[in-house]
Length: 449
Ligand code: NDP
Image (tube, rainbow, N blue to C red):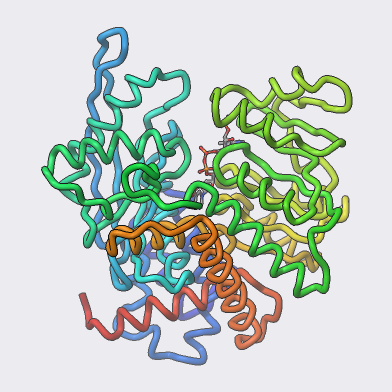
């Protein structure tokens, strides 16, 4: 239990014991507890009344069967999850992930992170997360629809505008949200726009929601660079993944003058020294849902595709892991540092292993954790809820301006909190403490519940 204050060690021991076989959840809790020693030393009241133990235990965990029928008339069974982690700041809020790797430990780690992330946005939203081990790859539209409908037939009784508001995540985009919203509307016989976010514009979605996580990440990095007296202009950037977060991070970075030289998908990565052609990536990954290897086939000269392998071997100054958890390990971190990286910011949730983060820290590299750097998605979801509640629809510019303002606010909160607690420049510590204090203050006010 290296790095964890003595007072907090029994809390981690309980979490490990009570949630056996959930390594990602252990990792997320450990990382937060490592930061909280400084808070309880200064404000012992935060460790009273088992407050931290309560924060580590979800308020509710729902696991359910999702039966559906594939195109060959075969009955398929998947498992669905919703972990309602903490509602002290508002209704539970967090995405739904469809990926074969999903299990309760992964959903719990994501839900736990979400609590602090949502607190950092300053918006009135609690934390939760959901998903299924359903694999959307290779499934027809009709199969996706039937699965989403079956998933919602169970989920609908646990969610609501004032209860729990799911959104998208890996494998869940506007198409899936549309199918789920349709089934929710039918089951409840009411048009409750604020029950899901990430909706299509035609039926209550927000402009800039699709772009928000990636754009927000770019704004956060812009603030980090500003602090160092520099900017994106001409800097080599590597982004992992080529999904929602990666694509819109690349788009904003290009507009800020950065140069993207590589991105990836779960099969491999591409390097284009002329700069990644984002429109082509969008065509391949967003429109056709095909493999990133096609990029190299279509581009030919000057572009290479590396099957498997690590995209972090490509030299860059700015590295943005935007694919999935634990995708950047200690070896990758060493390669990045050796090749001159100056900023690493997490677009995905917990993409850097603890060894990688430790290496960045000891090498003095600026590192931003996902709970701060990728909070733009959920913040804009909260703006979508705000528009739904007031039956309004904002312009793209107005929404993006609010997003930029929120991201600058999160950057300032992390930076100032790190400074205040004696660790200047440690965004991870700043994010954990700033998020924790907001949730803890609300919990203390509400008594032991
Ligand atoms: P998408 O499903 O749109 O894209 C995920 C991308 O990551 C795809 O390119 C996928 O490749 C790739 N990928 C998945 N698993 C692996 C792997 N094991 N190795 C390499 N690449 C992989 O998801 P999002 O962009 O929405 O989410 C990405 C990350 O960002 C997740 O950690 C998510 O939790 C986080 N996040 C997302 C938010 C959002 O608003 N969408 C908000 C905040 C965080 P392939 O195409 O081959 O599947």
